[in-house]
Each structure stands twice: as structure tokens, then as C-alpha cells.
Length: 272
Image 1 (cartoon, rainbow, N blue to C red):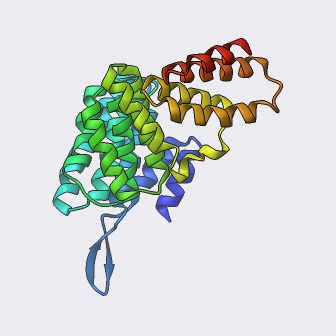
Image 2 (image 1 turned 180 degrees about the horizontal axis):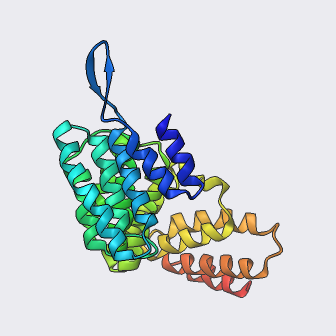
């Protein structure tokens, strides 16, 4: 009940009240005279530290205060064997360094890498922490580690939306890196991504297909791009969007040229 009340207070913006309620969650509960650990104790303490940060009017002081609470709890969670609890704590610690207010990838990665390398299991807290790690790794071009993170997410959550998001982060990472091997890998990941149930590719707008087709062309998958663009062209016909029509024709020409079909490329350009 206290956890629910704390969550509601935090959603209402009453961070002092939420923090107080989070910190009232007991470490153990008694059952027949036997003390048992409360399964969401570390999650509650993570929430308390998050609220402490939000209460602060000074960014660096807020980070230091919240981190000061979280770091000892990490040791406790590890000793207790609570992988989910530790993942929740590490997620909050990483967010102190990776937010709209501050971007420190090194500190965020340091907080999150143990979730990949040392923790195990399919808890929702570990899933969230790994997805955040994937975002940071890809933004910083740490693509080897990001591949490891993607494989871990695929292993434990093969049908989840986290795999969809993690795959797209990696696609964008390789696209940004832009080396020949990077562009090919981006294309490979696009072909995997569109087959994920959670991607909802079949429902995607023509503009989305144009963007994905562009990645496929740059990665050397001209045939697959042409097939994707044919679907985009069919969908674009009902929009009366001149710029979209031009975009489809341009990328169809680009795909045809990449496949060595230069006549088809010229025909597509002539239609613009």
C-alpha cells in the first residue's frame, strides 16, 4: 500500500511526501514468526533517492545526494542476491547522469554495465536498465558493447517492445558511424527489425518506409529496398502528398541504380 501511495504522490509532483512514503517501506515482513525480505524494498529505496534528486534545487548537489543513497544500497542488493533490486537501483543511478539536465555517458555506462555483465534474469527492472544502457552505448558509438546488449535483450525478451527499441537504437548507431561495414550492418538490422511483431512495420507510414529503405540502399540491400518502396508508393498514392511522391520516386531511382538497373532509375527520376 505504501508503495502505491508513494507512486501516486510522485505522479502528483509531491516529491517530499512520495520520498517519505517510499522510505517507509520495510526491509522485511513477518510471516509466522519468520522474517522475510520485502521483494520491492530496493525498488522503493530507488524511488526515494529519485525523489530526493527531484526535490533539490541544485543539479550537482541533487546528483550527489541521490547517488550517496543509491551506492550503499547497491552493495546491500548484491549481498542479498536481488538482481531485480540492483537493476532498479542502477537504473536510477544512471538516470542521474543521463537526462535532459545532464549527459555524462561515461558515468551512466559505468552504472549500467554490471546489469549486462554480472546480473541475470528477466525482471522488468533489468529490462529497463539494459534498454537505457543500449541507448547510451549507441549514442556514443560503443557498438560492440551495444551488440552484446542487444543479444541479451533478445535472449530474455524476444517478443517485447524493448527489443524493437534496442534494435532501432543500434540501427541508428551504425547509420551514424557510416563506415562501409557499419552501413551493411545497419541494413541487416533493418531487415530483422521489420520482422519483429512489435515494430508494426506493416502499419507504418510511407515516410517511415522511405527512411528504412534509404538505410537498406546505403547498406547494399537494393532489392529489399525496392520491395519496401513499392509498398510505400502504393500507400502514398492515396495521400495527395507531392513531396512524398517525389521522395518515393527518388529512392526508387536510387535503389534501381544501386542494383545496376540504370534504365529503371532514369524512368523513376523522369516521373518526378
